[in-house]
Image 1 (cartoon, rainbow, N blue to C red):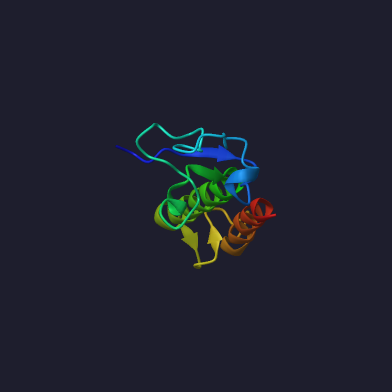
Image 2: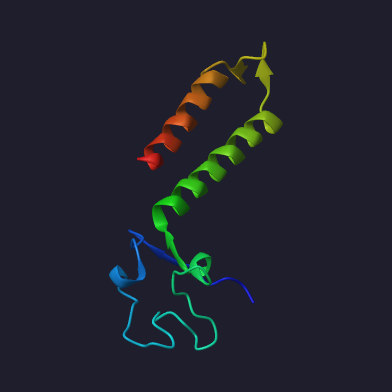
Length: 107
């Protein structure tokens, strides 16, 4: 069975601040399936299904930029090892542009 992931804007600091918290001694997490509890303690703390959407987006952008870089290296013809095809733009220009995209998502 795959790990359940729920993407949220802000990760709560603890279970008591979480909107999924409920007043149930056996299963205080509203995301619990009755078998697996997600209460953040020394036993189940690492299994919480809440994940930061910002971290997800940042990783996704990083992966896409890396795929673009790899595509450019594999498929484009480089004139003098620096210009791409007809010389309209340079490899460093593209790398800079991709770096800027990634930095936008790191904020």
